[in-house]
Image 1 (cartoon, rainbow, N blue to C red):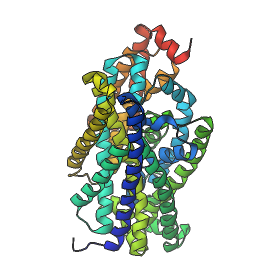
Image 2: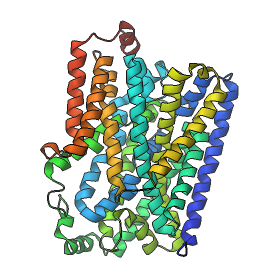
Image 3: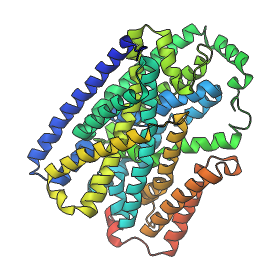
Image 4: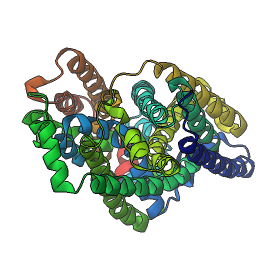
Length: 498
């Protein structure tokens, strides 16, 4: 603590205080719902999980971008680019159309169907579509397991950023960040999350522009920086990185599946496609979200790669962004700039925490364990807050022993979610013959094959493990659906109106 940098810490603390105020404001809106809906727990969960489904275009874009662009985009990604150079910048570009992929693929139909069946989460959608307890339970357990791993990665990134920039102890930084996330999410619900995401998206954009501009100026321009990177290691400016055999063509190509099109299968991202207000908001969200994604992803990953010429001897690549900020900016300004990466982390974690709490309270407790709670908004409110705290404590304990680069833990969790949800979501929305047996087979094969590949055959045919896992789960879905009985007429009527 002797190296505590108060000038950097104070702006960050003020930023976190603003998060609390937004949470309190959103909590007042939730409180009104409890009073105005005659104590109905179902209405409370609708407000808690989707904010009444009235998200406008700009807010939709900001919350979608802020939800997906996380510690991986602001800390882990630039950290890996610092190590591997421009090759990792190229890989990161697969994430740019995230908003377009999600809103265009799921589109109007997902929002219309979700309103029709009163779905507050992706698991609600799957429950009605497949009429299966097994689907709900597998979905909920997958969300809980993989999102806790994903949130641990984000908390680790935030704690390292605070540690590297302010000098506070890692454990204290972890607790400081975690408490802020849990409190504003638990008391504010979806509205608290999206209001914070909107502010965080703006802060992220400003921080990215400031960091990139200063790094460019201090490095003497792009041409000079690239020459200096080449002098460090010629592999830094090649498409396949500095480590021979690591970033091969098949692996690079398959990475675009992992962080490109397949992001539609992430529950915390797809839930955004349930909540927009109208078609105008959808179109605006696609345009603004894609533009902001391009700006932030390109800027931050280039900051990491270019930063290799400005700072050296960093113990972990994850520390490159805080190190650059405190090295290149006056302390107070550095604190303001670092609010951007912290905003990226927080905006992802609060959305993920919302989904996990929804899986526990809405999908498991209200549906199967304590159905009578659905009529009591006060009990539902207490359970959501209580489980948010419990999940927060679990993540804190998991994060106490962080890996060297948190990006790998984040990618593991992302791929696990995609293996579970991608095909049941897309085929459930667009393929009439998709049934519960096919969905269950797809989930089990997807999760199982991904875990097996990840631990025992991580690069089958040189590909990332997510590619064969998605192929296996797709085949399992189609084959099993075709040899078992089709969905009920009621399901077809509900989803297709015929």
